[in-house]
Length: 336
Image 1 (cartoon, rainbow, N blue to C red):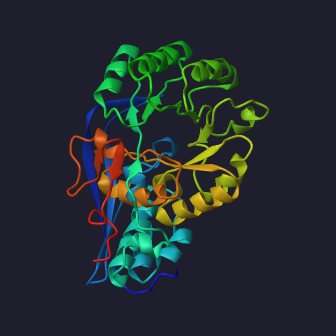
Image 2: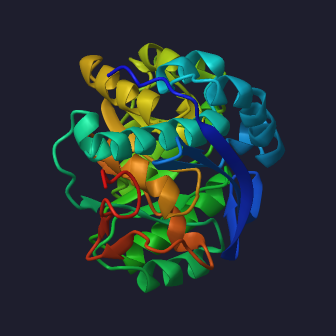
Image 3: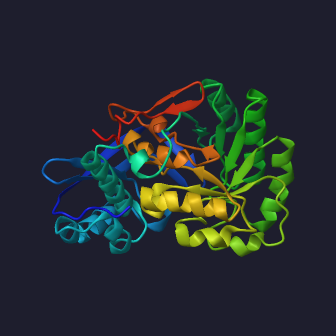
């Protein structure tokens, strides 16, 4: 759809949400998430969006704020969501602004975002819960503490021996669970070849981003005994065609691709290319999860557990029960 042009007021603010405890992945430890919150108003209706950025691209809170400020004049002069796609590159700032435009359009139209986007009424989705990298025994204990019906996503570090101990400990604790692992670019071709049979032995369902971004050609000729998921290798719509033959699944994150507009386009293009589709998150509150939840309606795998890491969330917020995420329109994107 073509977005309506009118003068708008844009409010930008930074909000910080601490984690319950430090969260470790390959090469990084996080203790809080710093969010850019964008609010668009036409004087009668208001739309909101939230961006967390992409840490490994230098897309931090200062960069997001500068990017959003750079286009403030154009937006307040009447630029539309369609214009936004060329005004800003993919990233956290465009995500926050794009989602704010979507909610504003929904309020103006008196129709929820899912309807404007041509989606069916959203249903609850089975979502993974993620275990940060830790000692194997600590991760096994954590696996027992989460919802027993939830699929389990396991962060690896690139230490082959320790990673295998982690996976084996979690499998012993959760013998019937769906388990996926995320290497966050921690492996190379040699260590990956050693890792794969051990993952198969433990019944792992998928492997996310084994090699660093830029090393995708190293996957050429490698047999994939379980599905490979592209995350850091799949930032935007332009990356999607290059995944075919090297990956089986594309992980869409709205902070990477710059918002719901491009996220939906990636999901639809990936299907046309024969790829499966996953939706993930770069952390964030329920305001981040809500637009991603709409992308999740088109996905095979859902990883929208960002608020579970936070010491506090927004109200109202998404809920997790019986292995499912529930996200009503009242959180974001409703038409009234």
